[in-house]
Image (cartoon, rainbow, N blue to C red; front, side, top):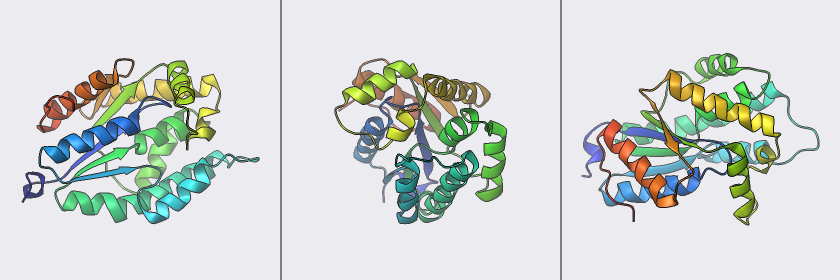
Length: 222
């Protein structure tokens, strides 16, 4: 029996704007926790389950005529509902550590704060459709939008988030402001991590936050 299967599971999410390195860091954290003896489920949003991945393809593909803000919000929540029911809740019930690349905070930032719908509307629809499941710990990797977008372009590979990367500078500034507001409003859940440092330094800061907040180990990067 692993350490994590003898107690409740942990739900950890990574958040941030474009190009901050969430996916890379999520993989590094998952490997670290697995080496420490935890059962880990590494997943992402939108996506994670088969139904949610199908909705992801629809949401992130560039379009000649974009979806309306409400339609987009509801599709993100439909994907999340399937993901939570099929993947996240069963894993937590089994005592596993779930690491998710984006969750509801991204929806609040992108479909709420950065659009005309507003954050309060996004939260209200979320609670009505999905309920009150929230992460135990949210790690927000912070980087100025211009820096993150440069990183996304410099990666040399086409991003699945192209549609959001092509949004205006003002849009991405609003996204960042929303993440800062979330961290300030919920300091017990959210930890802001400086994303402009070396990859290993960011990883170590994320590990330290997990150790301090959840009591999970935070050793050296590998």
